[in-house]
Amino acid sequence: MAIYSPPQRLFFLLAVAFAVVAVVAFTIGMIG
Image (cartoon, rainbow, N blue to C red; front, top):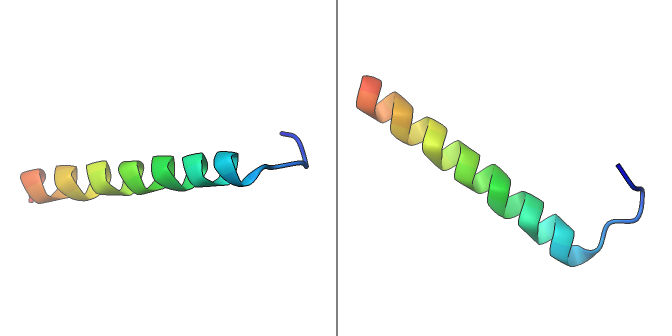
Protein backbone atom coordinates (compact mmCIF):
# COMPACT_ATOMS: atom_id res chain seq x y z
CA MET A 1 0.00 0.00 0.00
CA ALA A 2 1.05 3.56 -0.57
CA ILE A 3 2.51 5.55 2.31
CA TYR A 4 0.49 8.60 1.19
CA SER A 5 -3.04 8.26 2.54
CA PRO A 6 -5.59 11.04 2.03
CA PRO A 7 -8.25 11.66 4.72
CA GLN A 8 -10.98 10.45 2.34
CA ARG A 9 -9.27 7.07 2.04
CA LEU A 10 -8.81 6.96 5.83
CA PHE A 11 -12.53 7.68 6.32
CA PHE A 12 -13.38 4.97 3.78
CA LEU A 13 -11.22 2.43 5.60
CA LEU A 14 -12.80 3.44 8.90
CA ALA A 15 -16.29 2.98 7.43
CA VAL A 16 -15.33 -0.44 6.04
CA ALA A 17 -13.88 -1.52 9.39
CA PHE A 18 -17.04 -0.35 11.19
CA ALA A 19 -19.23 -2.26 8.71
CA VAL A 20 -17.18 -5.43 9.23
CA VAL A 21 -17.47 -5.12 13.01
CA ALA A 22 -21.23 -4.54 12.71
CA VAL A 23 -21.67 -7.61 10.48
CA VAL A 24 -19.60 -9.77 12.83
CA ALA A 25 -21.55 -8.56 15.87
CA PHE A 26 -24.86 -9.18 14.07
CA THR A 27 -23.75 -12.69 13.04
CA ILE A 28 -22.68 -13.53 16.59
CA GLY A 29 -26.01 -12.19 17.86
CA MET A 30 -27.93 -14.37 15.38
CA ILE A 31 -25.90 -17.49 16.18
CA GLY A 32 -25.80 -16.96 19.92
